Length: 161
Image 1: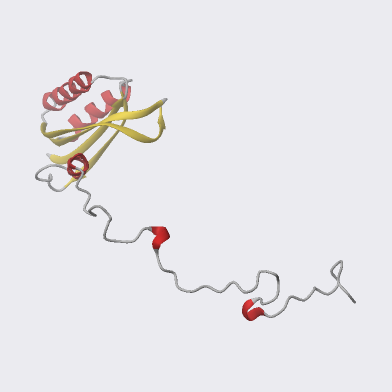
Image 2 (image 1 turned 180 degrees about the horizontal axis):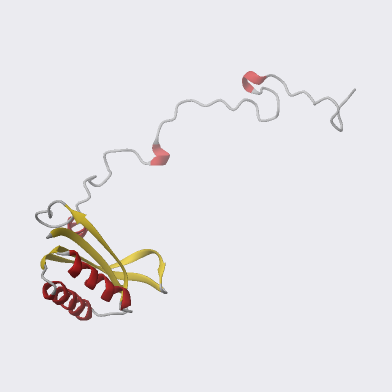
């Protein structure tokens, strides 16, 4: 049997209990067809990058599968027919990751507030940087830096000929 990571997105108007029921249903489908479901992670309700079937948010769920192609095809077929599942993606992997996924690690870090850059008191703010001396020249039109005085273009209106 092959190893897969499967992520599906459920509608935003479902409750967490209904999402858990969907996971149990799809777990049953995989097991009935000779597969095994390993880790299941609920990543929670997250904003979508763009609207999918009039939804701006979705419940994300990750499932680690050890299943034959028949079990995977049946689960994906049922998910494509379900109105509660917006999208799904299955990726074949060589080995399942140990411990929490990168998404759960990110969420845990965000909840703790540990972002790794302190209180930002040790570096200057954007407007506080020393940019060094700047020369704008005379704003009256006299000194124009290294470009010299302004001359009218030839053939332009108002130019003296």
